[in-house]
Image 1: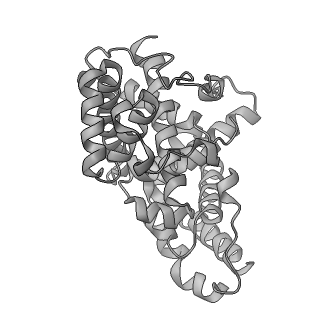
Image 2: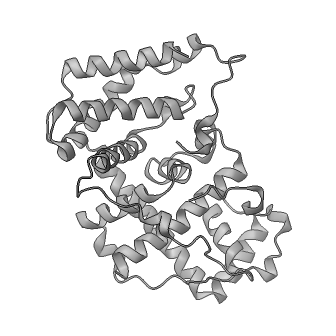
Image 3: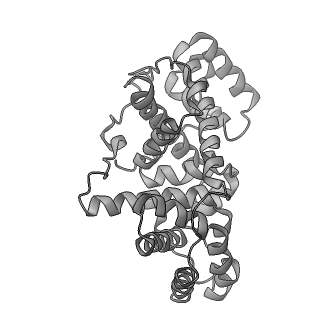
Length: 107
Length: 201
C-alpha cells in the first residue's frame, strides 16, 4: 500500500471545516481526533450534530470504541509476566545484549 | 521499515555517547527478553531460532526508534515487530503457516468524491461477547499485522500501549498532522478488516 499521508490527505485545520456541512469523510477524521485529544467546542458541536443525523458514522464511532477496548484487552494478554514457559537462556541473552551494544557503538 | 523510519539521528546534536546513556540494552532486554522469547518459542519451537528472532526484533526496534525516547516503547510494540519476523520466517520457508497480508488488497478509497461512505459500516453482532475469545484476539492481531508499518507503529503505541500522542510524535518523529492522519487511516483499515474477518465472514 503506498504511503498516502501526503499533504493532500491531511485533514484540514479545524477552523477550515464547515461544520454545518460536515461530510462523513471529515466526521470520521474528527471521531479519530477525539480519541486522542479533546475537540474544540465548535468541532464537538458539529460532530455531535452529524452523529445525530448519520447512522453510519454513529456506528463507526461505537465500533472504534469497541476496537480500543479490544486492543487494551490484547495488550493485557501480551504483558502477562507469569506466562508459562522458559526464560531466555543466559548465553542467548548475553549474545543479544552484546549485539545491541555493538549496534549502538557503530553509530 | 516504512518511509517514516529513515531519519537517522542528527550527529550535530545527538552524540553516540548520549544515546548509549539513554538506551541501555541490558535493562531493555531484561524488561522484555523473556516475554518475547516465550512468545517466539510457542510459534517456532526451536530455542536458537526463537532467540534469533528476538534479537532481530530488538535490532529492528532499536533502528526505528528515536534512541532518546526508545525505552518508552514497550511490550506490545516489540511483540508486533516479532510477529512480523515470525511471519517473514515462515514465508521464507514457504511454510503453509505463512499468511497473506490482507489489508494491502483492500480498496484504497473509503469515501466517494462527495465525502460519503462507499461501504458504510455494517452492524456487528454481539461484539462484547467476542472480547473473551482467543480466536477474536488472533483475528485482531492478524488485521494489525496486515497494516503497513508506517500505520501500524503509531497505532500500536497509541491503542495497545496507551502512549500519549506527544510521546508518539517524539518516538517516531512525526508532526501532529502526520500522526493524526496515520491514526485515522489505521482505524479505518482495521475496522474494515475486522468487519470482513470476524463479523461478516
